[in-house]
Amino acid sequence: MQHQGGSSNLEVINEKVAYENPLLSLRIFQTMRDLEGFTNWHYHKQLELLLILEGNLDVYVDEESFHLTTGDVMLIGASELHRDRSHNIIDYIVLQFDLEPFFDQSTIPYMRYFSETQMPLSKANYIFEENSAVKQQAASYIKQLLDEATHKETGYELAVSVLIKQILLLLLRHDSRNVLIEQDNFDRIRLKPVLDFIESHLMDRIQVEEVCKIANMSYYYFVKYFKKTIGLSFTEYVNYRKIKWAERILLTKDLSISEVGERIGMPNMAHFYKMFKKYNDCSPKQYQRKMLLWNRQ
Image (cartoon, rainbow, N blue to C red; front, side):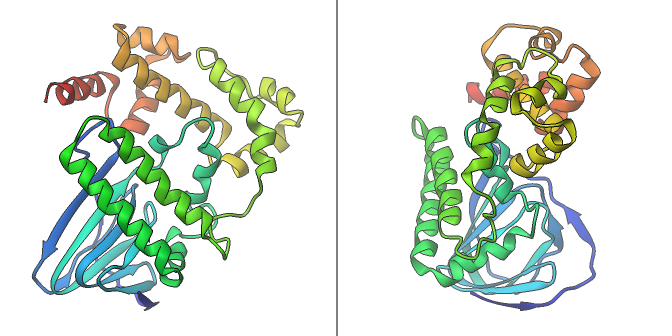
């Protein structure tokens, strides 16, 4: 993989990625192109990994360009502007996924490493360029992901989740330049009582002032510290966890939408709908219908 500077001012497309299984915020497919030419500049909220099975592909990310050949793996961050150019026949795998669903209460502090708070995620591609063993391992995980998503054997959702986490762990463990990692375990340990409190009080209206006492921090310091450590503001994190709980209730309990809102401490229906749509691109009722349709297939 070689890269250099380069950019262009053309029409930009906000790509909406459709998921086959609504329970898995992921799309993976193998595709072949036999025409030479550029795609349009585009971006999407999902992370993207490319694996070149055969051929050559030039990928342009903002001001940089990467030349990929057979066996190369490339990472493109959420909302990073990119386009590519194929040369004759190319066979490759595209993996796109949302970060949030693959992190739970215990691992969510690691999500910020992949949320590009400091620099574009594409800067981490040096890991694949400089370590062929890591590149080969990532390629193996991507192929396994495609196989699991294609054949859908019992428990494939578990396998997919594990493989995504393996790829993220691979990047974290081999980030010798600390492009992703720039904090120690102390921050996560210090916030554990706060995260535990949030999980056990999701049905309540959680006040920041109350949590500041648990963390033994002033309001101003806590708000900054939480955002720095988790990668989300305190309010964003609480809303995110509430919506994740709402998803579980919608799939497992026979409750009305308003009862679900009450259960998760969001009795204001307009607010509940707004937050739910933010994380799922659909209303709670639409989410329920999508799940029922998927389970019948």
